[in-house]
Image: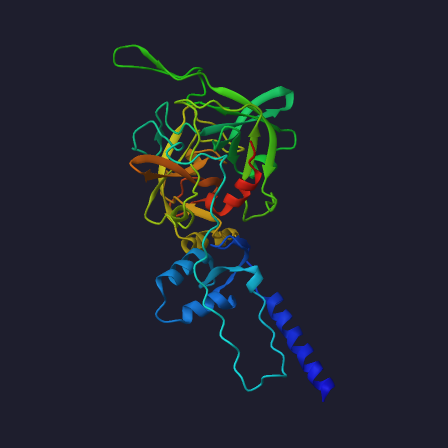
Length: 396
């Protein structure tokens, strides 16, 4: 009898392990509580599936479910399920047979860890913009988006090119896409960053005032890069381009001015939980990617977020999965992140005690080869999902 019970227990454990391994995983993701997770069918994530079965669903649980959504496949919702809670609990077949198992406590919306870095500026000392708010694929004014950076590559024959974008986040670091660091031609070297640029054909950049006088920016600043920090979980060969984020440490401390200043990061709790639906964001840059042509002037375009479910319906045809660590935005014909650089910023304006400042919501990651296609949004790395990575890697 003892042997039979032991064999039954072993069989149950093996069945549970098989069930765990049999779950279809559609990519890796970060939960709203910033735990590592897997993108799986909702019904396979026990602790979140229980929330759906509770009626009525509380507001906090509804928000948790919405923020946990990471895709849509075969008519079913995909959810970002914490890896530490995916393995079904095996139950022994002896002991306490007549007693029902104690109910597990209902999960609540996890609170994000406070952001305590003193090395990164906070509003109103960041995200200051000098220009009007009329956007939609047009040329910026000279002083708009002073955090925008051009990433410099040294190519064979010591030819210098600027083929990706980035954003200044403090006086020593620029944030960009990991693919701008790790997915470049083998004979290219990422060597520097240019700040304070507007018109790539002139230096300094000047425009005529109504009185006929020249109004000029300061000359741009070229700053060598001495360290490249790519997210450790980024894979250049991955179709989904998860964790497409990197930091560039500059050799020389940056002096802030009206033409060069940092963007804010989404460090407030409401910003970290923002899903952006119905809100206007701005993507800006020089219209460059790592492979195509350039624009002479800094450009900007206003775009709106798209739900992950809608985005995945589009990208499933490309065998890609978009997760909660990414943002989908755009999909309006003729206006897209082709207006900005790969690695460049997607920003949102926020009011802070009477000040209007921009914070960095996303980093240009990828989109359709023919940009500006109707109903085909671009994909951006969600910066709020990587604050721990940023805080862990910046230093004085």
